[in-house]
Image (cartoon, rainbow, N blue to C red):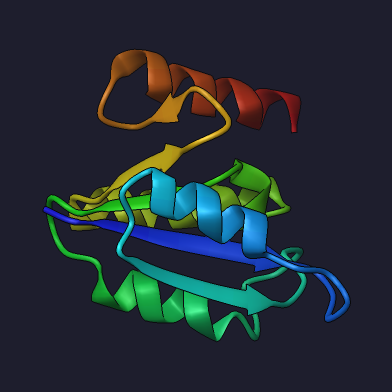
Length: 114
């Protein structure tokens, strides 16, 4: 059972240092980061590496859900993939932790508003 972090910014002139610091503070020893748009999963190699690597009981940690996906369809696909693998999703700046009913409900609520 390990915590793995994912950090993303959209453009090369942006910096993900604050995200990395927050993920380390949350207990992530391994953090994958990339500078690529979140509007699609296409070209997001670091995210795909994590999705392929995660195992049952692991937790994927992001600072905010919009770092993981910018479209509800991509978010739903990623969450479905994680659930199928037995992986938990947690956000450090939002009350999202798919181990708890409240965390799952908040994630679902975000989907409604998206």
